[in-house]
Image (cartoon, rainbow, N blue to C red; front, side, top):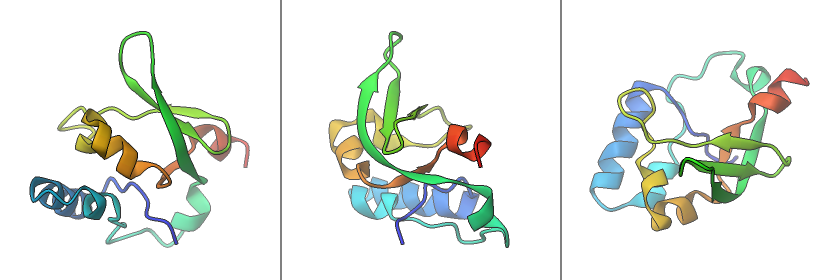
Amino acid sequence: MAARMCQNARSQSFAAHALAEGDTAASLRVECADPSPNDQDAFVERRISGYHQDEEGHWVAELECGHRQHVRHNPPWVNRPWVTTEEGRTAALGTTLDCKKCDLSK
């Protein structure tokens, strides 16, 4: 099973610690510690296949389904320090994000 980008505080704390220790890959493999019972039904996970920057310089993930999703590092609301470096973005290729557009079409 591919790792999800989890928004749960315990997982984010672990990911931040792993990243601070220089283990970018470990920070990306974090899975939700407390997934909801309907977690698998609630989200359509898609792998990140590439990136580009929008006209404002924000990073946008290109998903395998063809949709795009901004991947901002905007603490404390969104904690994605991996977005800020080339190494971090490269390590995140192949990990999954919840595709909001695919969620709507379920």
